[in-house]
Image (cartoon, rainbow, N blue to C red; front, side):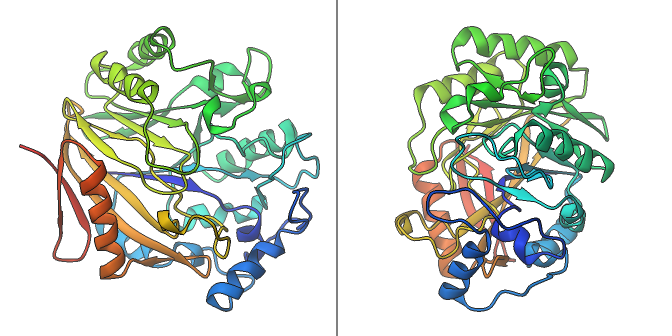
Length: 362
């Protein structure tokens, strides 16, 4: 069983409630201190502790993960891990967390951070280099960003019974990644795809297959699309299915949307088109209530030795007071109805302990 999540944003307001906070100054049009996001959340739901322990933000998720014990735990870390004070010129939003707060990732036993996203260079290339160094020193593997293109394109590799899990991470410009952030042969950056054309997709498939061995299970983690809405573009669908058709990907793990989107089972392989945010500091920011962005899912697919999906559990969560809480029965049922309406190839049911099981539709 593998754990996959959408965006984990431990910077900005989140960083300010932890034990080691960076300077709260940010350079955004509507907010000049990261503490303002904490105040907005407290106005909505009540006091949030300061100098919070590393396990605080994970809340109820920790007990569930301890019991289910996924072998590899992967998040999209949409935050620079740096004390750099040089924001990327012209970038309107800046996320960073203090390097000492990597113990928050350790608290949830995170094994790997996908870094191909539109916030990892918010504090310039020096901030990216410190991010890589901080995570690697903490034993967290990375994929999707690096000191050069070779490192950004390389997979994170995990030994598991019967083979390996390989995580390849990349981003598409539709998620807001500036073209200037692209890693090059001699320049640090993210693995940024020029487009999602068939030519590029087949190139990615060849790169993955060149590194696969018998028994490997390959995950393609991609940051793509806008923040809101349930639509999945034809380009995204073709990209995901072409990788599966080519025998390159066993799971396509999409993220960027602030709320969960549809999942699909295609040729026995799961496609998560938008995993949704898991942890962020948006609490108290209004305007998108119809999407219920405080609700999230943690995805736990179990893959067979040939890469096919055997089963998948979804853990319904709610963010409140900057902490993950188990969703109520009403909230869980809302997520269930959303999945039933949007998804393809799955049937869903509530497990005896209140989780959502996604089973292949026969």
